[in-house]
Length: 416
Image: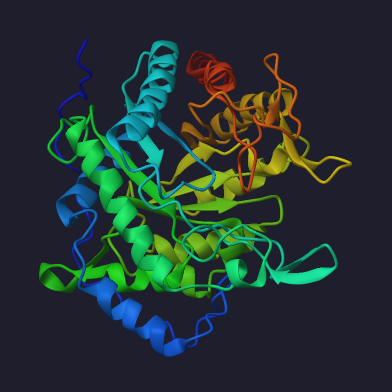
């Protein structure tokens, strides 16, 4: 059956000029690599600025309009994909497997909710990763940390770990290939919005993002690297370069927040990205962990009282990461499910727009998280170079815990 979204007029978007993104001088820029050759980096940035755009302004504004409707409860949002994409996975077969995973999870969400589902991939640009330290020690040697394929290589050698700016252009070429494959599958910009695979990634590497800011009529700007950029927990500083950059573009923007975020931090973040309180502009993605998710309630309450019409998406993955005795990162499906259940109840009780789910998952038969008959351990099933992902069976089990009927019952209970 062909998926459709109910027809509705677009909401009115702010039409005033956006702040300039021409320079980020003076804004603290966290999580950036130390490039060895500034001249080579400048050439790469100039080349990237002339390259083909990955998304156009009409698509960006269309998604923003659809997210505004999601904030009103018309449909759900599913955002899923790799922790860090492999730039080699650009062909139709590889992309079709990822699209098939999104379709499967969206159908589980649709059946459970009775609402259409926007399918958003962590795809066509998820090549950079934030890290907790700039260096790591391997066999007694200090090496630059691996920051994703857009920056360096994971092999534990000085040469492989030295940041290489030419990888920025290679990543952009890979993203173009993924976009082309999505189009060949009939799920690109020409598809009905209900059939489309929307792209998203963490807007982390500024030397990749800034050259892809493009102009629009009326002085506005958009980020041509993805439909839906997000800011991570480590770069959400309200006066930082990442927040400033995404405050200057018309794309819908998401920001992850952890239990470390104060009410003041979150309200300032909302004020900088969504000063006009425009539906569809801002999504907040809590990543608290099952043990701390109870601390979310005051944030939801404060944001609602401040009048920001944000969407709330649950990331139950990152706050539930633990390191085993052998140094292996693992996650437990039971904890992940527990956080999702609590998230739904908390956001709903506090009057927030409980919109959907954000997860790291793979269609491959991996064994990186515990649960659903899987015991994660080093071996052929543990292939991630960064964080552990759910396999498809585990991701389906998690998505089945998205219970909007419980949301409806809770709203009825609160209103009585």
